[in-house]
Length: 508
Ligand code: BG6
Image (cartoon, rainbow, N blue to C red; front, side, top):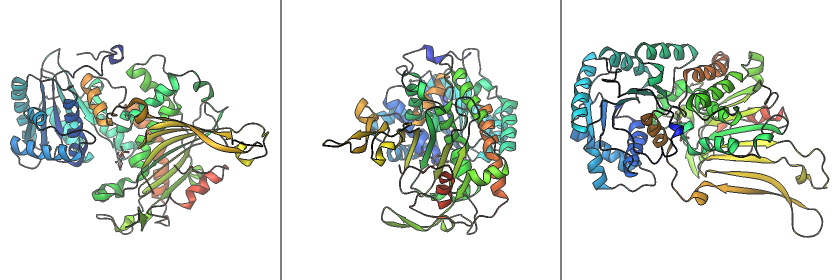
């Protein structure tokens, strides 16, 4: 079925999903249990899930459908955020949960899956629509895609039904493997069936950047190099690597957060308005922006990219281990658990404006925000030093979602004494409704056939082209790590990187 333009449908968020079966590869894993099942249950809670809906879980562990249902019940009850767990609703939802065990490299698995999908289609009336969700280790993506292809499972049984596949990040470990993965996907699936998920694009507040910029008349005229001095994007996490030491040691912050999530956020902040609000038009603009980011030469990397790694420290009054002491981590690991990079966008709107991006684990608190710093007034009329402070617009992505504009104001009383103040918009208190999680939004979108908030291969490749030279440059060096204490705001070298241009990191 050709994908309709979902934006022509103003009621799409009120509409129920079309019938379908969701096959989750890696159903026993962390992502499925923490994010996917709670999101799907939550959609059921909102009465968006149609009766013709089923989930077919897969992992290697032998389990009956009943055991799978029990396991998923525990996960949903545990990880459901800010919604009640209703037993009666769960019982109804759980009747559509099925399970098939099997090794992903065994062709027999896909034959069994085909059989189960047929029975499920007849039992649950899913209309032959199937969404495959790759939530396994990335090394399994190839075998699963080939397995689906060899059993013909990528083909919809008739004209009116569809087959789609969601691929979780990382899309490759580097630029070369990103190409390889893409070739493998396209041997089996047509691009219109492929949804590459970057859950940051599903965050309500990231989507709101577009509404803020293009739904209002007053900001866009200022949104360029004439008025904006620089932009800071921060994604700080207070958690360490937890049980993911093995994966993270090979990934690092630049790969794990900046190559995908934060470059997508930057693209959303900096892209041009699209001519129409349609999936491919919006994605074209994001892609164009990513392609305009300057690719750095080694001498530029030295000055514009800083790796960090946390050593032991204290967070929230408690002792925290250093990264090298975490489970599964090599005591000599050179991994960046913090990365800060200065990017430049070589286009007419942004030439010369630094975009400072940083992300780190074991920072003092969890916060993601974007600070747009404007130029100062050309001349200060008032004696106070405060009056020459630049205006800042802060877009708070999480956890306290909102937007603030910082400016200076006269203090009441005699004289012209100034103080910084702020105008605040807060999502929670302004709308008084719960914000859907990124996974709810993105699952709803893919089932509706809306790819606007999914990334495209050209974006994936453009982001790799930007970070690959930095990764290569870092791989050839040995840094003196750890270089920041757990619970601090990162290495000194990162402050120095901004200081060279006369800037300082905001404390969020
Ligand atoms: C994931 C990274 O993609 O995003 C994790 O692999 C990180 O390391 C997570 O913790 C952050 O997501 P969020 O939504 O909690 O900001």
